[in-house]
Image (cartoon, rainbow, N blue to C red; front, side, top):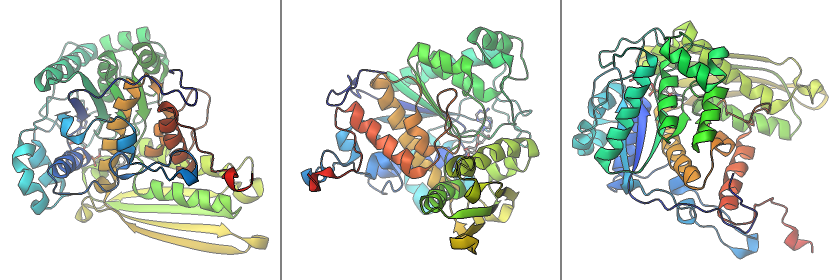
Length: 442
Ligand SMILES: NC(=O)c1ccc[n+]([C@@H]2O[C@H](COP(=O)([O-])OP(=O)(O)OC[C@H]3O[C@@H](n4cnc5c(N)ncnc54)[C@H](O)[C@@H]3O)[C@@H](O)[C@H]2O)c1
């Protein structure tokens, strides 16, 4: 961490030149993100949902009336300076993939079709044993997994040279891989590199991308619940190489809603008997999650949220043994337009029961795309400010935020937002804001 005592801005390298945003995965989320950035920079759309583009940040006392846009306060990369590069085992270019994903309408895609057709995925480090519902043809071959990782590193160098960029960020937008628990292969970098050379099953493709990114000094963000970079070998490597890392699993849809409602219940000391969540989803992600092994990875990510916010061990009368069930059902007609239902059984004064029903007709990739943009821009900013390793202040964007070893993740969206904004204030040498408002009482 840089020395950023209040009032002293961190030394922040300027955002000169281009920033390449790499996405392993050129599916619904990645294409919606890329198309959106291109439409915004052509003045065709508004970047709704993005804090880096639309949010303001209050500075100083309330009476100071200083609330600039975050992008005017913090030296972020301008949208015009972003270049894109992707890998995918399916060879479709970004236009074809976007049409196939069915998120954006033809009227939004056609004006930028040429731009999207120019983004073709590089061959992926892919193995269908980790994403059983997909078969890919645009796939790298190599002597072993370490060789594949070296090929990914070369891709990173080539793309940076092609775009004349010195800086890059990687955001995993690939499918959810099967559930893997960290083992001895994940404890040290020596063990990890040896496991790659031995083609150990515990090394999933997403780990090869994370390794390649960190070795190349490229910040890594993980939008899926896969283990990917969430183990000591790669986290230590990230610290050693001065690379920010964050994850896991973009916080969109139903889980985002949970992290809004649950803090509200707890703030009012209302009890919870049970929370039943079910979804229908028809995109490729839904198809992948139809496989029990991939769903297990997702389920673990979704279930931890309520427990962490409600702290049943601290409030047993309110939250001990509440029932929490999450279901995802693959239902092709819905495409990317997921529908989620939540039934929440709560208790009030004297234990009287009440219910909340939420029916959320959301568009998954529309919610995820601005998260990709913010994570990329903030991670690049963090790296220029000398931050490395796990970026807890980006927990705001994740369902299963990575935290320092031994600490519990913070899931409350409002605490996460405060942490994010205070980190920006702190790095820029402004006072952090406590919302005390003492000026009226003194
Ligand atoms: N859409 C959301 O709101 C949301 C929220 C949280 C997490 N996610 C996660 O983000 C990821 C992307 O979601 P999506 O809706 O775009 O899915 P998608 O299926 O449309 O796209 C994923 C793409 O990744 C590719 N892929 C799979 N393995 C790969 C590999 N090893 N290398 C490179 N590419 C690979 C697939 O071929 C596919 O094109 C998924 O893991 C999903 O679970 C999405």
